Length: 300
Image: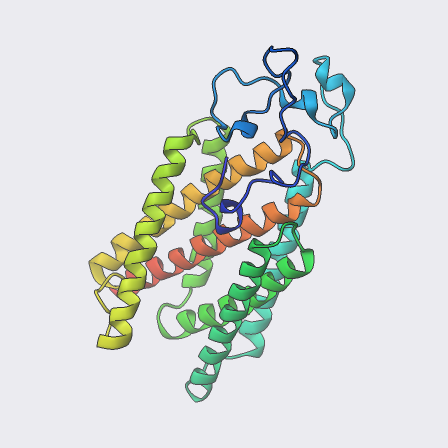
C-alpha cells in the first residue's frame, strides 16, 4: 500500500531495502512460492496472499507455526510510531507557541513577521524534500522540519487570530483533533476500506485540488485580489471542506501504511518515517481547518 502522503508515496516501508517480509521466497521445484509476499508482485490486494512472515528474518520462528508473534526490539511497533509521532508533533507545537510569543504580529512588524513565516516554510519544504528522497529516515531532518514548520504555523496562526478571527486557532486545533479521532475510529471499525480504488481516487482528487490551488495562486500574484476566488466566499468554503476531506483520506492511507509496516515487520527506525508522514498530514488538515473557519467567521 502506498500512501498519498508525499513521504509515503515514493516508497513503502523499506520495500526496496530488502527488509523483512518484502521479498518473496523462490518457488520450490515448480511449485508456488512458500510464504509469498503480495508486495513482491507489486499488488498488495492480490487474492489468496499467504503469510509473508514465512520469509521474514525479523519475525520469530513461532509466527510460522501459527503462534502469536513475540515482540522484537528491531521491529517497528505501534508504540514506536506513537512515541515518534508525539516527539515530532510536540516539536511543531513547541516552536509554534514560542514563535507566537517571541514574534508578535503587530502593524509595525507585520512585514517582518510574514517574511520569517515564509522563510521558515521554505526551509521546512526543503528539509521535507531531502527526507523524502533519502533511503532511510533521519530523525535530525524530521525534527528540523517539525521545528521550522512550527515557526511558520505559529506566525500564521497569530496573524489570523489577531487580524481575522479571534479564537479561531483553538477551534482549528480542536477540529484537527476531531478529524484525526474520527478517521482513526472509522478505520479501526472497518468503515473505511483502503484499497486500490480508494487510493487511486484520493490521488486523482489531490492532484486536481493542488492544480486548482496553483492556478488560483498564479492569478492572485499576477492579477491581484484572491485570484479565481477559490479561497474566499462560497467557493472558499467549498474548497476548504474539500481540503479537509482530502486530509482525512490522507490519514486513512497513512494508517494503512503504518499497519502494513507493522504487519510486514518493518525495522524500528521506520517509525520516524511514519511520524513524519502523519505530521505532514495533520499540518495539512490544520491549515485547511484554519482557513475554513477564518472564512466562516469573517463572513459573520
